[in-house]
Length: 604
Image (cartoon, rainbow, N blue to C red; front, side):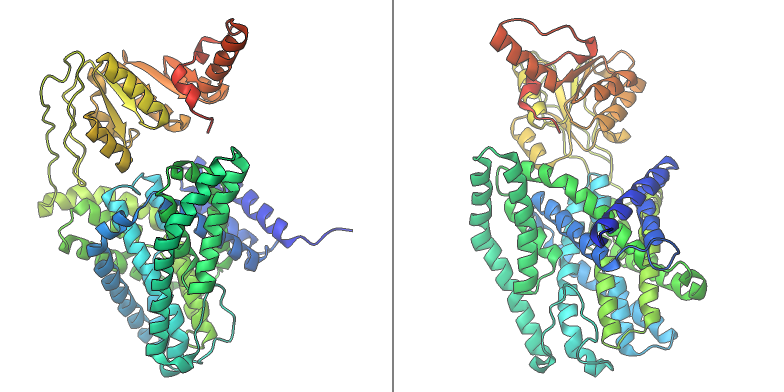
C-alpha cells in the first residue's frame, strides 16, 4: 500500500524540477533562480499536473531564510552593524515611508480603503532577505562597505516589519478591518488589541531589547563555549549538528519567546558565533543546507503565483512593479547620495532593494485575514514579488551600465588612488609596501611590482605559501576580498589588491603582464579556471600553479592552461606512505604533483 508522504514529495518535486530548470536557465545565460521560480509555478496549485504541499514548501523555505541569515551573521560583527547605523537607520526608515506612500497612492487609484493602502504600501517597501543576500554573495560584496550598508539596511527593515506585524491587529479596527485575523499567520506573534497601540508598541520594543541583551550577555559566552566543546570531541558530525542546532534553535526561540522574526534571530546567532575562532568552519558546515533550502524558498514563491493574473490585472501589476523597481530604487539612491556616499554604492544599494519577498507575503496574508487588504492586493503583491525577483539580476546589469554615465555627468566618480611604494619593492629579502585602499567607486590601484608572483587567496593554504614567499625574499602581492584578511595582510606589510580576482579590473591591478608566476590558493576550481584563462590572455609566459581536490578538477585546470595543479589528498597520502614505509608513492600523472602546503587543508 503506497504511503502518503507530502513532505518527501514536496522536497523531491521542488529540488528535482528546480535543478532541471535551473540548469536550463544557466545554459541560456539566465540566472538559475528564474528556473527555480518557474519550477514553483509548475508544481503550484495554479497549473495542471502535480501539486506540491504549499504549506510545507513555505516552512521549508523558512529554514532557508534562517540558514542564510545565520551565514551572513557569521561574516558580520556588532562593530560592522554599528558602523553603518548612521546611513542604514534613517535610510531604511525614509525608504519604507516613501514606498508606503506610493502604495497608498496606487491603492487610492484602485478604490481601496486607507487601511488597504497602508498594508499594500508596507508590503512593497521591504526587500527579500534571500534575494538581497544571494545577490551580495554572488558579487562578493558582503564584507565590503556596500555590503555592510545593505545588510544593515535589511536588518532595520526587518525590525520595522516585526513592529508592523504586531501593531496591525491592534490598529485593524481603526483602519476599517477586524481586530483579530480570521486566519492563523505563521511566524507572527500577535498581541491582544486590548493593550492599546502604545501598550503593544512598548511590549514589542521591550521584547526586542530583551532578546538583544540576552544574546549579547548570555549568547556571547554560551554559543562559542558550545562550539569549542564540540570541536574538541573530534567529531565532524557532532560539530555540524551543533552549528545547525544553534542556528535553528536560536531563531525559533527568538520568534516564540521574544516575538522577533526567525531571520533576525538567526542573524544574531551567527553574529555571536562569528566571535569564535571556529566561525569559518561553522560557515563551511552550514553551506550545503543553506544553498538547498534557499532554492526551496524560490520554489515556494513560485507556487504562490497565478500566471493568469498577468492577464486579469495587467495595468495594476505594471504599476506595482514600477513602485518596486523605480520608486524604491530612486528613494534609496537619493538617500545614499545625500549622505555623501559615492555613486557606485548608491547604485548597488538601489539595485539590491529593487525586489520584495517573504515579509511581503506575510503582511499580505495578515492584511487579508484582518479584512484590510482585498484579495486583489495579495495577487498584486505576489505578482510584483515574482517579477521583481526575476528582473533583479537585470537591475544589477543596468546599474553597471549607468555608473560611468552618471559619474561623468555628476562628477561624483573619484579616480582611483595611485599606489605609492615605499622603498624598493623588489629588493631581495623585502616585501612590497601595502597598496593604497581601493575606492568604492573605482578599480583598485595598479601595482608597481614587476617580475613578481601573484598569490590568489590568503586562507589556510595561501597564508602558508605567502609566509614562505616572504621568507625567501620573493616579491609578491596577494589578491583577497575578505576585509578581516586584508587587515591582517596590511598589518604584516604585504601588498594587496582588494577584490575578487575573477573580476577583470581587480586582476589587471595585479599587473599579470609583468608577473612571473600566478599561484591560485583558492579551493574553488571553477573560479580558479576563470582566473587561469584571464592570466593566459594577459601573459602567455606566466607560470601558473593551482590547487585541486579531485582528478576532475586537475584535468579541468590543466585544460585551461595551468602548468602545475597540486592535489592535497595525494600529498597527504604521500606523507603517510613515506612516514610508514620510507618509500615513494606509486607513479602518478604529472598533473597530480603535490605540495606540503596542502596537507593541512581538508577537502572542501
